[in-house]
Amino acid sequence: MLHINEEATRCLLCYDAPCGGTAARAIRAARFDNLWTAVELFNSLSDEELAHAEASCIHYDKPIRIAELAKAVRIQPSAVGVAFAGTQFLRHGLREPVLPGFIGYLHQL
Image (cartoon, rainbow, N blue to C red; front, side):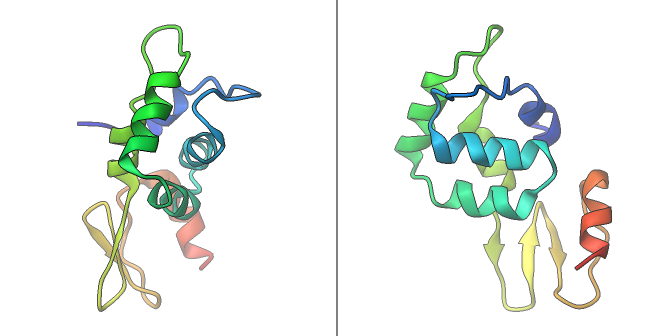
């Protein structure tokens, strides 16, 4: 199972990221718990772009699993709110989130 924070933290935060601008921004957003932005950015990338970004990763150990990271943070709108990682966050009266580091941000909404 992929842990979003652990995988995003592995990113080297390259200045001129070979994985591409949008993919790099999405990984940075996930790394720094800005998951709503990460979702928007990952949703704007096609599967081919994600595969290319992952192949371009220059991480010294093994490439960041960008395609899996994208799948882990993507959300699907629902009639009652937004489904996020198996938990629904309603616009009013949010339920407790899956990611503990994200709690402070959600309480500000």
